[in-house]
Length: 299
Image 1 (cartoon, rainbow, N blue to C red):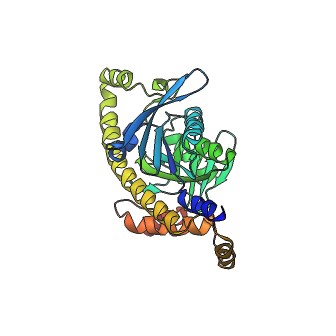
Image 2: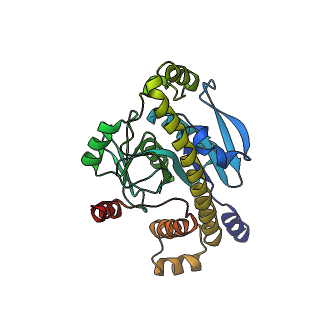
Image 3: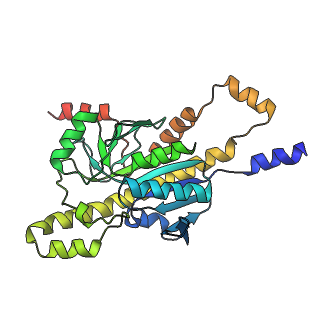
């Protein structure tokens, strides 16, 4: 009986659950993944496309905190993962960050209530906003939170994961530079987080002064998506490889040995981040302090 239980403990490998806002952010990654429909709510009020590949599941929950929260709940309930990762586009608050730079921030701050989440590894601060942020708001966020980037969903995913005792991580990619003034996209986001792309295209078509901005936005998004998907692939490979080498539930002898080596989740995250950084050369992991140093050198 004891042998059977031990074998069952070692057989289970936790899944990575990934929460993105839109499919276009992760389309190069999930192109060949299996997809099925996931319903949430007593009367199946919400429907998601759940993408799966091996030990990884991914859901695109929509834009904004509420959409991210609901998607996180649905995904955790469905796959019972060992770790939830918030992935997607972010705006740069630090002028040294370029389109396609990948960030794994150490802290995530919810601008709505000031709640700060310590991820346990990584560098810099990511702040989550309730709205699409323009150039002026970027400056205010940078000063108020000492943040290097801004998104709309990471804080909600973090709080959803923590409420259910699931490990949390973040992988974000810069899709708009600090001096890029985002168009007013909020008006094209529905209550469930869906972006009405057809309405936005019609809006831009009638306003020639927005054409260049829209073209730049599309070009930057495409570059950011490729970099993000490469980063996620490297992270998944590294995480699952380490989980295979070191199972979470150890026999009594191995547990004693583990305690003497001071192993921890933080150590795993730091090692995984280093391995990820080495494998992913197409994008940069830029700490806030390093970014400021670069600015001073360039003066």
